[in-house]
Image 1 (cartoon, helix red, strand yellow):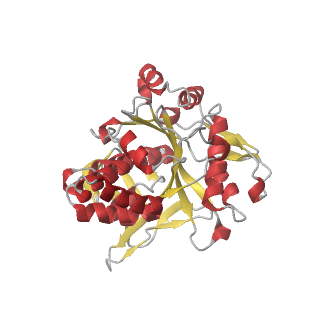
Image 2 (cartoon, one colour):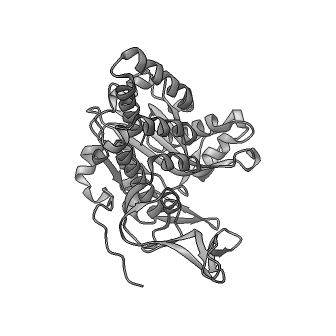
Image 3 (tube, helix red, strand yellow):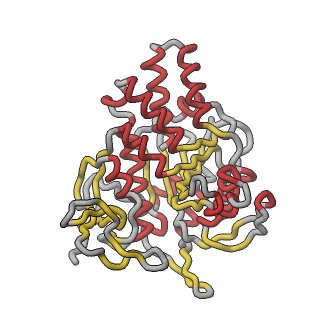
Length: 375
């Protein structure tokens, strides 16, 4: 995602500055100050401020209670992205949020370390005033340890609520639905026509029965032009999925959403319109906090400028299948041996070779929708 958004920056510089370097630098610094942040990676940071070789990025989607820090923030979506030394592709692997891991201690936030679900790592770093920086730091160090010492050159924290302005600026996206998905968040009263939450929920937040007269929003298999609210609602779903693939389905759909946004953001109708590009970039800072690893934004732009949406390869963790383990009555997810080796290949710049020998790991991006089993 950041690779493609960076290319939009490059397009803006060319369009608005008319090729004048000084004007481009002014714009670049303006947007860089809004979006880029220092630190955030702790011991998981790659040494030496350079992205001349292979690049590893940590992309984190968070559920953050703005203005209510006591509620904390957890990482609902964790994606490790790898750009090979050739800088001509990007591979994306999701780590299930319920994966059981060892989380290092965080002295800054008074967390003593322990074993928990990986999405709790961000929370333990975020608590007690740690905020986003320490949340990202502890999560990055946790993932690094999982992957045999993997180091990151940069990271991005994504607030999916913040994406609303960005997707609105894009005017929606074109996506192909690969399984029938029923929304638990959006529906309409069939008598009054009023919008509302269609389902009742139990104490664990699991949808149970439909509310009287409510009809939920349904996303049918096939390719559609999604309105902004539809795209954001679709990628949140994990409960009412046609293939019953839960978090794995949501991970796949979020990766598809990233590709769809990238394609729309760099389409001719967008980047040829300086006003729209400016509107998009003005929304980026509300959705994305980019930790640039002390590498100037201009270097990121030109290093990643040749990566387009067709060169973004999404990978299936655990081959898209649940691999649960129950410990002391609590259900966790675990990475199978192939997923562990895939994750470790990110640190040795051997992802392409590994994937070539395991082609089944390449996720269907729904360019050609797959059929779903009948009920």
